[in-house]
Amino acid sequence: MNDPRTDTPIPVRERNRNRGLLLLIVAVFFGSAIVAGALRFSGWRPAGMKNHGELLQPPGDLRQVVPRLVGGGEYAWNPAERTWRIVVAPPADCTDACVALSHDLDKVWRLFGHNADHVNILWVGEPPEGALRNRVWNVVEPAPEFSAQLPRVEEGGPQGAPVYVVDPNGFVILRYAPGFDPGHLRTDVARLLKLK
Image (cartoon, rainbow, N blue to C red; front, side):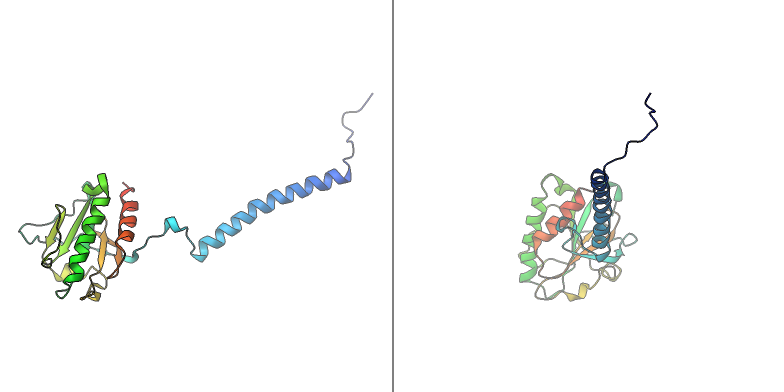
């Protein structure tokens, strides 16, 4: 009778092919892990994952600052409403560039569509003559404690003003230099609105 425990030898060619296939599987697995690790630690990110604004590290903290509205009253942060803010703190000599910026911000806000109700615009100080305002604009009085939490706010001038994105809790997380592309602001805030 045949003993089932006796191993029939595997031909050398088939054995080498199986070993080669196993090595190929191991190389593909570990090779992709090594490439992914190298990309991660080199700082590379896919274009769809990058923000256009400057990510502030550490973020400014406006939670304890209570902005006063120019018309009277206070602007409450109210994190439960999940409202994002776009803050503009222009210098006094910003006129034509700030009028254009107000039109751009109105356009950006309208492009949020049904999510527009979750975005407010805070304009620090009186807007220049001819600035376009919509219903979500809140004009707040300039205050040193407010401006102190906006990094490099003094870089604005006749060429424009920096713009900041503030999260629902009151942290200043993104900064856009004067003269930025409004489409970049729209893209970044639209991504943030999906984080609900």
